[in-house]
Picture: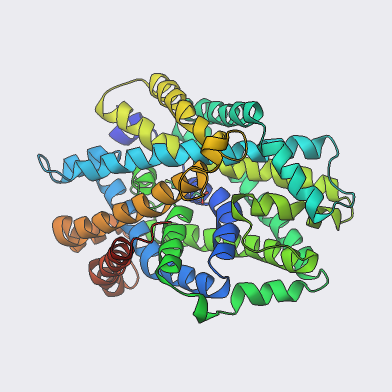
Length: 456
Ligand code: PFF
């Protein structure tokens, strides 16, 4: 007889889970969003606050989500329903599903850009000298075309649908296992090249030497949002993935490994981008196009640069795909579990709706005047990024901490984390962080932002 987890699908092993969860975490958040946010938030001080957010908020919330997922074996809405039937808590799961949708709708647009660049690389577009202006013009050419931007976002959503409809271990696990380690190797090579460019060390200093005069409440909000976004937290993705982890696996080890690799990849991306900016003499606050504009200069300074470009954009597209899969999976798992839809129906219908919502973001980089300068001079995509990627995830994480600490109870969460028989190290510390540090820190940041109205 099939066990409930076998019927829903399950990872075949812990490494399978680690790779899938790391696949969700590692993506455009690390390579596109981290450097661009760090550049807009002043560099070193942001990075320091980001690292604190990962350790003090990200890892505890990650454990909380995994505990809920493993204990209930449900999607985010079903999980809260199972723990506290008849309460308002499932609304928090619903917020997570809406957030997944919101993020997927702009994320797929940037993922589409990686496909444009991949195509450019395959046709031999990198490897010869290109000035900073030429590189910026290339970005506008590749992303500003409204028709292509929409088509490529659509292609990306289609790829995501194909994998998600194939089911959890069949689709997601296999894709990630092989390709993530290759991405890591390419990133290390690019970072070494970038750091050794003339004046490259100035970029390293910018990234790691905190300048506290740059710190304001916005920087805290950005760092918190980035930590949650990068670890795929605050919207139930890790509840969903934790629900597929066999009870016999050691969850704490899996969780810490995911956070560790995710952070390393973000820092590597910083070590690729900033030294190159300081070497070529560009702007650190280049906005959403930053990584795309800066990278060609590194490829062009490498022997066989075009080959690196092909490998890099291919792997970046795969990294983005393993993240979009988790975004869609959260929504699909809800309709499969709670509404008894088939996986196919859920994946195609939800993916289709998401594509429609992605269109304004696809038009926001020059394709349409209206969406390019939408509110306060910001483009539509950047605004979506802030609303869903910073605020919604932070609110989700705050409520989740309150739920685990004060409703479900820390002992039950620990019991779930230790179900495999492996004990959770530093239990007292985790319980202190999830009860006090996380809710207070996230709550204070959100209150400050609301009071000072510095939303963007
Ligand atoms: N963590 C992904 C990244 O860094 O690219 C983005 C993401 C995926 C955020 C899944 C949230 C999520 F639930």
